[in-house]
Length: 84
View 1 (spheres, rainbow, N blue to C red):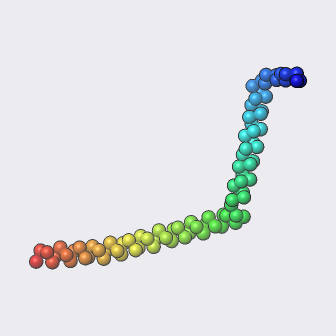
View 2 (view 1 turned 90 degrees about the vertical axis):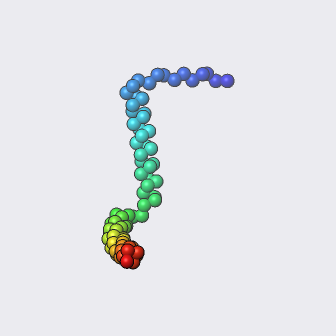
View 3 (view 1 turned 180 degrees about the vertical axis):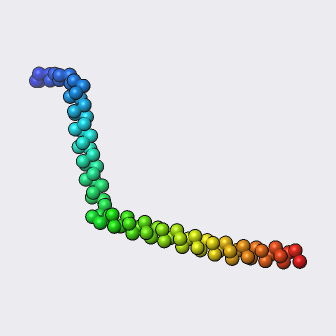
């Protein structure tokens, strides 16, 4: 059996340096993983997705308004028929 390895105690400055280096490596690896997932033209795709979303909101509002008008007229007609 060999000698027991004795480690020296690290100062606060050295501990901070080790922690910061580990954080930097972690963040670099995280950015590499994100870059693998996103396509190269992700900004354009996000822009088009936003435009489509806005158009969908307008269409949904118009359809909802028209359907509300139709159902409201039906209910209005039912109420008038009941009161006659």
